[in-house]
Length: 244
Image (cartoon, rainbow, N blue to C red):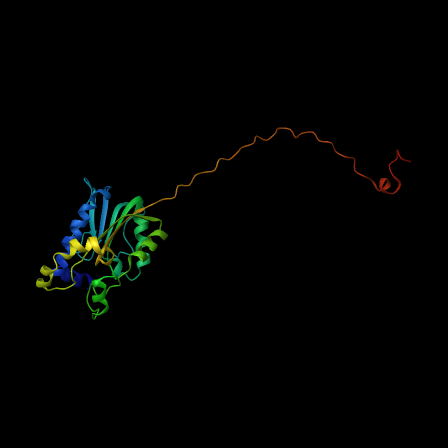
């Protein structure tokens, strides 16, 4: 039900404008996506640009190549080179589990792309003052700092960010045409208040450096040591026989 309503929103004038903006931004990040196995979760269409020769380029969703829950992906651990979450974090029942699952299926040094709505924007204000009965306004918008903290806990390193969605969150074609200048000026003047944030992170692995062990060859025979003669009861009270 949620994906069906979200698909209807993507077909709206505002959704189409955002879809084109995200497509252009992701294409500019193509050099950060590599590997043979790449997966996109969410979205109305496949926006993941992919590498030059991907072995598998799949989309996970209700009516997609793979039907599965984002919090429980049917992929082996360390099997995906690039993974994109297309506005999935905002509607997840367990966003922490969703990110842990993404970390599980990604290979070492794999790339994770997050497309999320920004609460500190006009889009976030519309969510606060709307009925929040239909997507995307009924989702939970997370701030960029919180997302970065979650990724840092999972040992992800941020390698790139993009800010977009500076148009008014309105379905009016007249307003959208009137605010065509806002994306150009917004990226320069107020990038922190963008409607949508794209975060690109790399899964880092901590190399374990083994400490050198100094091996000592055990002696075949123990070293000779001076052993004192044990004292007897007679020695304690009367002294040794030699003393008497």
